[in-house]
Image 1 (spheres, helix red, strand yellow):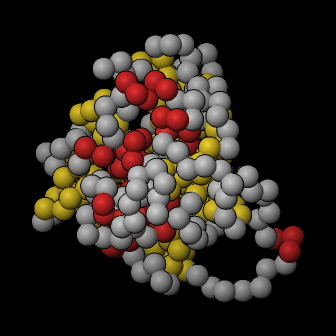
Image 2 (cartoon, rainbow, N blue to C red):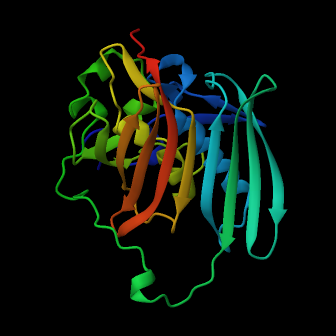
Length: 279
C-alpha cells in the first residue's frame, strides 16, 4: 500500500484526464503550479504519450525520441488531438501530434519510433552511468515535505499527485535528484504504460531542479526533447536534473533519466525566467 496516499488501486486518485468522445477533459489533478486555469506540462506530455501509444505498434517499435513544442500555456479546458504519420517504414515510424483547445493549436509533438532488433552489444557499447541512490531506502513523501514548503500556497494539481523519494533536497538551487511515481491514471480507464509514464515524467526536470532567481522569479520550460535508450521498467523513475540560465533569462535544463536498473535516457529543455504564481 502507498504510505503517502493510502490506496492500492491506480484509479483511487482521480485520473488526470477523463475522455468524452474525441475530447479529453482535464481534472483538477492536471493543473499547473503556475496557475489553476493552466495545465501542468507533465499532464500535457502524458496525454501526448497516450496519443503516441494509440498510433504506433509499440510491440515492434520503441520510442526513441519525443519532442514537444509548447507554443502557449495549455488551458484547463476541453482538449482534442490530431495525429498524423509523417513517415512509416520497416525501421522508422515518425508521428506528429497536435493538441488543440477550441481549434487553436496549443502544442505540437513529434515522436520517432525505431524498430526493436535484439542483438549482442559489446560491453564498451552499453550505456553505463552510475544510478543515483534509491528509490529503496528513501521515504516516500509528497512534494510539500522535501524542502518545497511554498507548494502549500499553490492550487491543487499534478504537482500534488506525484509520489516522490528525494535524494537531493536543494529545491530552488537549480539541481535535483528525485525518484518519481505517478499513482494515478493519466487517462481514466486506461492503465499507464511505460511510454505514457516516461512521457509525463519527461517534463519534470525543470520542476525538480527548479532555479529561483529571486523570491518573485522562477523558471519555466518552453519545450521537451527526450531521447531514450529503452523503455523504463518498474513504477519508479529518477529525474537527475540541473538548470542553468544566462543573464538574458534564457537557459537549459539537462536531465538524465533512470529506473532501478540503470540509465534509460536524457532530456533537454529550453527554459526562461518567469514570474512565480502567488495566488
